[in-house]
Image 1: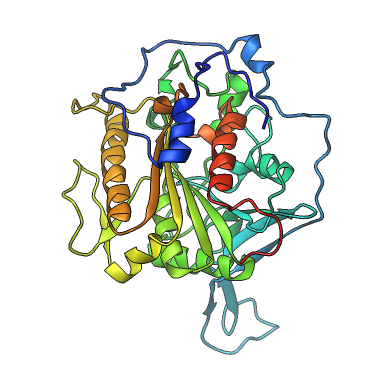
Image 2 (image 1 turned 90 degrees about the vertical axis):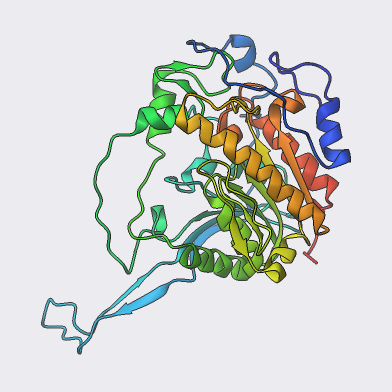
Length: 387
């Protein structure tokens, strides 16, 4: 793979090699959010090798979509075609929506991309400034790519339980929570795409739950999707992190998990560590936890997370400091029980300025390369039928 230029990165990439060889990257001793300030991206960044080849056509052998799992709500009575009432009728809902693209001679393990909280699969399709997202990047690299919308969200919005939707402004809070900066200014070294339209598109990624989202219902749907897809690598983001762990427990077809900034963690019963502030682990039976030790797992975290003992004055940033600490404890628990779990903290690997959405930041090709290298290291990139 050719070397890509990034003016924000040092030439020494030994930290990234260490991640792949040694299996872990330590937490930074005292990384804090960069100094507040507005920024723009230089033309050297926008015109660097990070851009994809826009002249090369995407080659798709087959594409489509389907629903998996779900339930059926049956109204009492007998259906009467002359009456406009629900009696005797059914409502199909609570399923997962799956969109897929498969290239010719696909690699043996597809990638299943799962959005985070308040998001849909749209976040994987393209970036907010119009560059290719993981859907196209990894299709170009020979992977079948499946994007899911979890039950009662996005294109899987049909719910058999109602909810009350109350419009609540929160864009500025999310700007801080997802570590773009401190509103209205971006962090000076941010990798977030610049410009008013990019920010507009970013805020419009958000969507609502159309009903309650209990963990069991959501993960049953995801497991049903894996039953149809077959053996595959699961890629989670943020709130789908814990849902990914549970889906990996439920489905033997989850062959690996690459988690971008997971927000919740599981531990064996009797081994749940004390909470880190307002962040607490979830207990699962030991037999279930051991299933996660049979597959390779990565937690990847970006920049702007304090890693020392001093709390951040910004509550939503402080949550990330606590999550990072608790995530490290889950990794330790997995490896203590014979697992293959790694933590990649991008600043420790010499990659700075990434947000909660590193896979869609300006340097998302470099972020994708880290994932590709790991897939190769774990022999998950071979072509041919899955084993």
